[in-house]
Length: 78
Length: 402
Image (cartoon, rainbow over all chains, first blue to last red; front, top):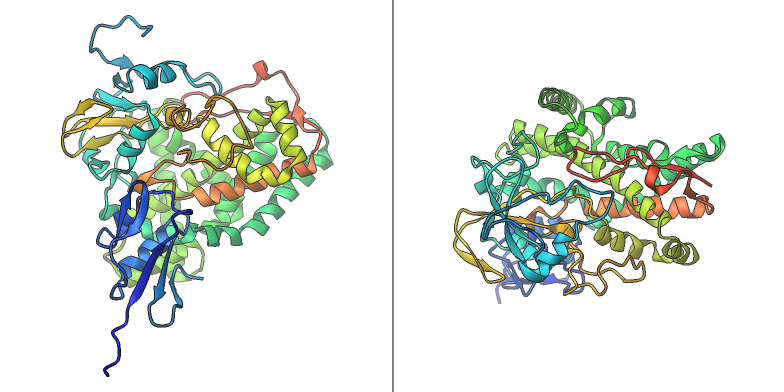
């Protein structure tokens, strides 16, 4: 069996999200607003700087990017 | 409607001179009867004004509306000068490139790390007030120095230089309070000063925000031009404290003139974070709404056809009083709970410093109520001097006793 490709999981906490649309602006390929709340368009994803930028730019830190293999938090910076 | 203008003619906007923190009743009437209306501001082209919460959120959050299209247009505005340029005149992805660079410094987590230092500054300021004894001008003694010292700490501006940019930064929020010449002069001085700080950090790297921006720019030249960095740093310095300075006094003014609500907060200090959210909703900080968004395609708002290229102004203060979203919207209720107010705006231009402002406002209110339980206005409400000719509503001084 070959080693699995690195992958990240995207999650948005719907109770924290204020729907500012920042993530959809920064990473339109990864996030979109659905009824005023951000949702990841796909997950898991291949590692992508835009996901980190979105998570670190969220004004309420509603986005968490985790490593799909071991679940450690990739962004935002802890 | 109560006006007598001709059918289809634009209303003059702002509807009236700002009266303390009172919102013109015409907003409520428009929300009910004509939620998207034509307005003419003192300068620039005619625009649509959206007054309902839902429409305001669309104008601010929907990518079919653009700020970048304002560049080169005669933007509707209350100031003679057209400020233009900068991060507020950009759309994604240009906007995102700048925004994400500084956003990291303003996340909830980073801001929490500043809370102990902010509390220490607030206590120090109250110590000085207490030592001098009542009365005191809260604007000078507390509301102004607190945010100024915090933003300096964050950016890495030496405390000894604070008096310099306190003068210059009024240029950023002035509409008519300063002459055109003075505004240009102050902005020039502020930019030159920031360019100096940036140059210093090239020599000696620092871990403050300006140091981090310098590093990001020098590691990857595409991310930020020198001009963008200077404008951004100057903008953060000025915007980062003018608004918070103003809101601390506005919030205390509202509390001191709503004794029942103040009593609730004194009895239940754990409500301070909720109180800050409710006050953000209730206080119309802006003297008028501006920064129109330009439609990129034909669309409809509350049944009104907006054509591509037309500017629409989102009335934030009106949206925050929309009865469709907030029960008894004109009533201050500190126990309302953190509702979906848009006092910090919405969409990609949502206030960058919102978390910092929240923390500072919580510390300011919490410290004043805890340390000065007898705090009260030292003069009659009607004698308080309000500023004019600015983008925001605020007190020139707030004499208090305790």
